[in-house]
Length: 440
Image 1 (tube, rainbow, N blue to C red):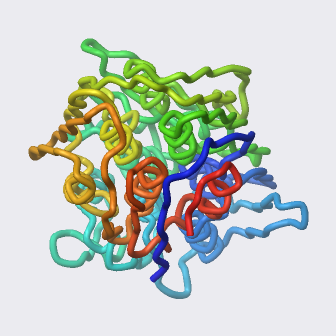
Image 2: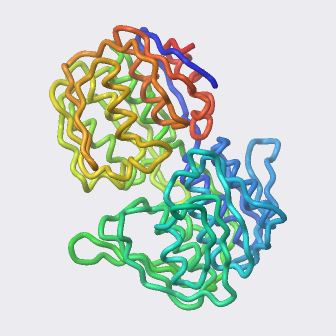
């Protein structure tokens, strides 16, 4: 247990770089392990979640080493060339590691077992297993289709065309990664387009990936199987989901001005910034460029005296699913109601994030209403009273959201266990304190 208390603080100032993008880091390791030759990854997020992936692909036969300069060197085994692990793969708290690896393992002719911590073992895996069964894989899973589970890959996987029943970049990615070692073309149809990091990374490594726009805003993503990937250099940008926390603090704490440099600004990841601009936040995005196919930019955030509640439409949910906890904290300080729609996926993340935010904000004196897939926060136009002890429930984003809220609340806000923050944002408290926060 690592309790932390966040106190009301002075203006935040400075320039920072946040840790590397978690989604891109996972994919660089996994796809690099299936490429021929050497992959060099710079700026890899060295969080517990990503290190689980590094250990897993190493157990599957790839050579993975951290170099003296901080870069990571991967010698891949080629598409279909991974080998059976000597023991079960420990996914810790990482849903991304588990779900994407299930796709890779489904198209390899051996069995491998996955397990995780108490939080991960509660999260749904059937949504990933269902399409992979159609490709020929078999599974032995815990009650309710949860971890621990064993993936029994097949000798001759089958290409499929699969329409996602729920918008999920992880399910899409698992199918596409399985499709790499499958003859013919494997296609995923998504009615609500999700993050496209996998498509961009596969293209960067030389895979044949096509994207077709369909009527009604849907997309069909197709990967051609049994084509070799070639090792590449990948520079991982800062994670916009991590940048969201110092960005939020800057717009809430009076007198603040910070610049967050080298942030991934993928069009399907920037919906939080769009929402905050609608609320009246003082944010400037500049210095756009490309890195390994990904958009990158610098973000300047200033104290924003007047924030107003907005309705966040359901179609944004896949593009900002990890940012709703910090948005709820910001909404608590805005004027009027902020209503977040179509966010049922939050109930099956590291914790039930809708319930966690409702309980925590309520304990801080904020009026909150919830439904199965929505959350409404009634702000008063000023920071809430605070003074609560928040149960993090092994959820890093819940912990960080309430530590940010404590920076402006009338009374300090405590988090009972902040250890989970290491899964995505190592050094969070130190970076925030370096800007002027008071977290101890």
